[in-house]
Structures are given as C-alpha cells and as structure tokens.
Image (cartoon, rainbow, N blue to C red):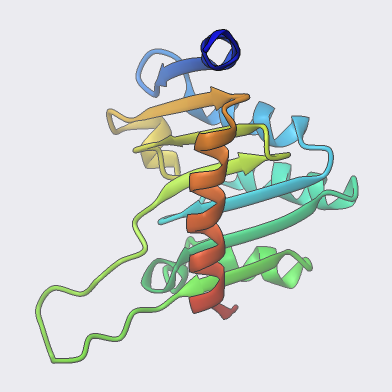
Length: 165
C-alpha cells in the first residue's frame, strides 16, 4: 500500500492556460526536452514555432511520430505537408462516413507523449489561434505510468488506422 501511495505522490501535474501562461512555449520546451521518442496526436497543427521544434527533435535523433486529422491536414496553413516533406513520420486519420451526413467524425485529440515519461493533453491545438485568441488549456502529467500507458495505447490505435501523409 505504501508503494502505491508513494507512486502517486511522485507524479507531478502542471496546468497552464493560453491567455495567461503561454501554452505554446510550454509545448516547445517539452518537445525540446525529448531525447528518445515523441508521439503527437493533434487535431490542428499550423504553428511554425512548434513545427520547428519538431524538426529540431528529428535532427537530434528523436523518433518522432505525428498524427493529425485528415481534414485539418488539407488546410492551407497546416504543417502536415511541410513536416512530411522534411522527413517527419506523419500520418492522418481520415474518417469516411458510412452514410452521407452533415456531421463528420474527427480525430479531435490534442496530446503528446515525451520519452514515455510526460503526457501533455488539454484543449490546446498547435495553432496561433489557440495561443493568441482562444481560451485554451494544456495539462502536463509527469511520471505517471498509467497515464502514459493509456495515452500510448490510444496513440498506437490511431497510428494503426491512419494513413501516411
């Protein structure tokens, strides 16, 4: 029992808000800290600064995999094409509805796993709007094996059903 309690005490959580804390810098710092592996699943990815941090991680030898929503990847400001062209391992989740419908499913996640030790999640897309206009949050969870495992499992599920960009 003491071991379990000690494990939960060792996990650290930090919460930031774009309006007051600047989530983009926090995300970039986390990417810059990656040494081995970086897994990103984000609905919309248009940030030049974050895409540069991702490229820098690749240049450092970090195994980087990125998943974005298929419709969002088609946006003219999306960094999906740019990152893929720079050799980043990027995939898109493109849901095709079974019936013609007004509502179309989306890969709407916003999370990142760094070195299987840190999970970042929340409402924060990797966009200028998320940083400068919207009220967004980003939550950083450190050293919680269960949280890392749950997010890693979801990332791998998405990776299996997605297509290379």
